[in-house]
Image (spheres, helix red, strand yellow):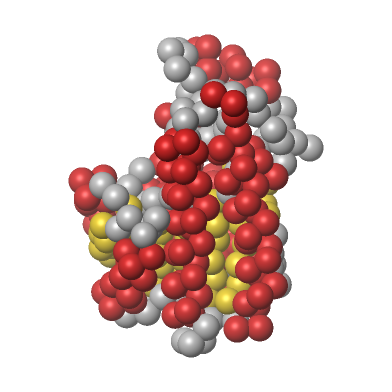
Length: 253
């Protein structure tokens, strides 16, 4: 269905790399106008260049979503430059200072919470504010299997924020479906990005570890995560509200 999003305006936070970049490229291939947002202009410009090379349309928006005025400006600029906002994908996330909860530095905790949870909430707040007054829309949040679906030693801050993203998604979905805003989440397990590689781990060692941990025998690709995001945002998922779609190759089955 290559034209599901033809003429649609899509905002992707965290669009400079990894899952966010794959999501932006996938929407552009299906005809959407895309705004990619994040903190690093060079990374965002690289995504815009890849979209343009494929014949698509994209713009870059530099923003720090942990700050309310920045999040509000980001959404306003996306609306102005794209001509509206039909879909938003909130994919900004960090994984900092792995280690026991009792050893975690306060600044690492606060940065993780500010980015993964508060920043996502601020983004949603202003995305919803626009959509509810302009015929509705779809929002997809990137959560994780770590948190709501399974635990992982040494990742307490990350797990806490991603579990909260799942819960916030479900509550927001109930709060705003009457406004025509349909909100869901995708919870990936290990994805083939640098974030899934342990310090000092070789590609062969990583592949062996994932074969042992995941019934499918491998990590998901960013393209597979993007496909799940597009499904939840697409018209065929119109009755899907408040779901948290697990994409982990059977690891939590």
